[in-house]
Image 1: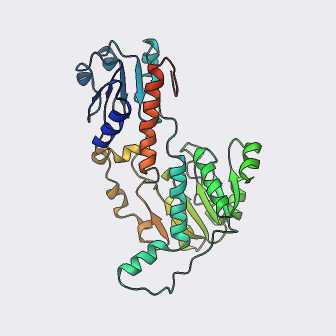
Image 2: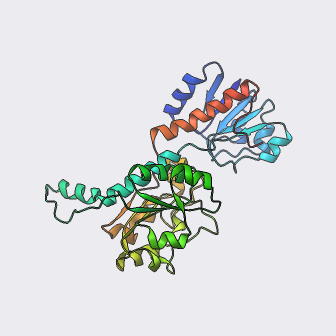
Length: 333
């Protein structure tokens, strides 16, 4: 097939070129527009990211198009109904970073539990004293996992490896999953009162916004460590500040913050267009949480591993190869 790729970096071009060499490939660093679509009228497949709006105008310029492969989980940038009307298949990348985000969750937790960031700052100043750097073991502690989807499952598995007790709150409990992974379901209220570590792995919805808030922060077990690698608005910032000042929260590891720019797709934060749209430095510059010694903040980076980014490309390759052989995988139409 003739396949045109958009919104790619050089390393991605090389990766795709080596693995799809039997196809005729074109690579573009910019997003797909109606004007650019007119330059590739023979393309049978296109692969895009979220800044390429695949609408009627674009589709009109691609009469031979049979497949749209988006290199993202979301597909709001594609007119799926119009594609379906024209018999064009749309495929996405349903998952790619579950273990990656879970590993970052524990990177934050371990950094806090063993005061890694404070130790590093001290040794950078040639101070090798250990006073005030006492940490705590994870073994025997209770972790409350809020949301046990693909990422939450990996968090549970890692926690069991540390011999932690695991409580999970989930909208749709699965007894078989709990038995297989060795955790216990509990209400969110129980997690607040029993968890030594509270870790969030839920999407942002009206129901999950401010799950941890000014009203329920006082119900947390004293000294609880709060970890958030989901979405910033899941936790009310003022509640974290209150919990820290009252000694309720023993530490916080945050890869996301309330008020950060709207992010549709994790990989979006690496895109040059996102950098122009959203200055995360401006969001963080005067953030009160930055001044707290027992708070560790990372810049929405939990998804960002070499393997996770390659899995996006690998799934896109599988989508294209399967379609070229008359099969459809990861199809949303």
